[in-house]
Image (cartoon, rainbow, N blue to C red):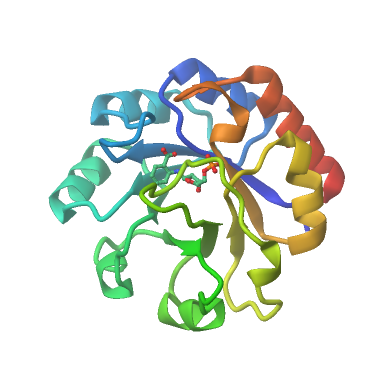
Length: 206
Ligand SMILES: O=C(O)c1ccccc1N[C@@H]1O[C@H](COP(=O)(O)O)[C@@H](O)[C@H]1O
């Protein structure tokens, strides 16, 4: 099966359109004010409106207030929520919306148990643990921590870039890759050549 690709942290319509034309499966927009990739609801709505059919929009939150999430869902065409904080499963389920749960991996993370806890998620996203940084850190983690036993689609994230995407697919066999800083020219600004290389290498490796 082809490995899907989500590129996260778009702030500009033209970058998102470029990625869509390359064949990206999902575009991520970050609603987390401390992030340099944080977008306003208006920015996200413009990006979402510009996209062609069949490109998913993923809205990323970190322990956000439900009121913010509901406002985004009312004003932006969102296909999937990404919870990148410490949200318990019951808080992820209240929106009647497909969701993925991000886990920041440490040596004792129980991925099998988490797949049971978040059993109704559309995927479990495994990212690097970086003290003081919630995500988008550009750090990777030890892929050997990922068990072979999978009851949910596994989305691999953390420090991915064109240089390691092929190796990541071979080693982990994930459902999808999620990349942010590895295809950037600057914080929140995507690099066209890096995005193209990432998608090309992912297609070749699958
Ligand atoms: O992108 C961000 O700024 C961000 C902020 C807070 C939580 C998550 C964030 N991004 C997610 O982090 C991972 C890994 O990113 P990177 O490729 O290592 O830069 C990815 O899932 C992004 O969606």
